[in-house]
View (cartoon, rainbow, N blue to C red):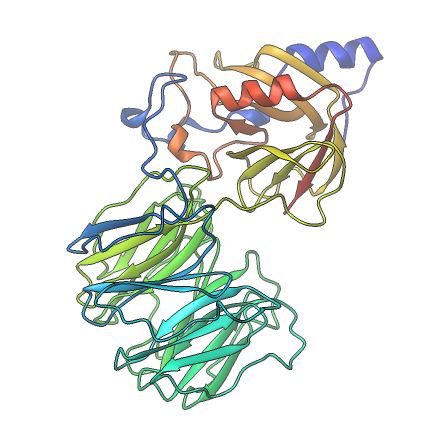
Length: 435
């Protein structure tokens, strides 16, 4: 990275007094009518993991909010839409409404987490699949094979049944698609370099095509599946997509972000959305059989990522839109949604080199607080700070937009969390940037 030239005092003064054109994104990225007063935030709609939120004609049949730190794997509706199953990553299955418990994996020691639960076409059975591609069948579900014996390049993220129930597809995060039984292989993305990992496969109603959905909201079609739109290269959304479902008429689909924002395409109806808390993000989405209602379920926040350094450090994940504050003993004392810029700064290990309680952008009277600088852009410093305030005294984005790309380089936090990070860091504190 190119640094400012000149004497050390000049560079230090620049770092203290100039912030960063890179820190302030264009005001057009947020609707001015939706802006809130600086430091004033709407209440989050979720509080803990295990909640289920119903929209449209979907009914609330119960949840697992009383479960401590519930780690959600999947939420799946019954065929009638009058109930649902919730699966945990450790293999437990919970049933609500008219859903019938057909068995689970709570008595089995798993070597990889459960990632999906898929129901059979007759509604009387279901499959569970782990990230290693091991498939377990219950009730009328037919076991047609698994990937437990295969060395995978990326974890399995989804099991999609063939419509007749006589087969299924397993999908890996790298875009690899594996067909079993009557399900046909129609193509995949395993041989491509993906911008963001695949999170779901959606089959057409007759099984003659499917869509692959990426975490950035891009949509890839195979066979007879029709493209209805996507979020790829869309600066307005720029959210981490965690779930997707197709419409019953096969003419549309929903994409859902970790903060509970719902994006609709084709015939998919927008029936509401939520503002999920950073410690209770949305992790699963299910749709009623008539398409006129849906549910979202929350899970525990992700722990500090593996292979992210050691010791006392701040970890920033660009793809997850998160910052963790980690003490030297590994305790996580902060786990925050943030807004940054896609793919900036580059992954690596940095150190805090200066801090400023108040600072300015150097243009348009934009002001920031709690600035903690740890690297450089082309000419300006990059660091953490609160949501900027424009020349009219308005916040440049809503708190609910944290968790999406909004900045031109710096990493924005809610005011109180920026203050916590500012107080916690010292010059020399390690900052680890990961994808």
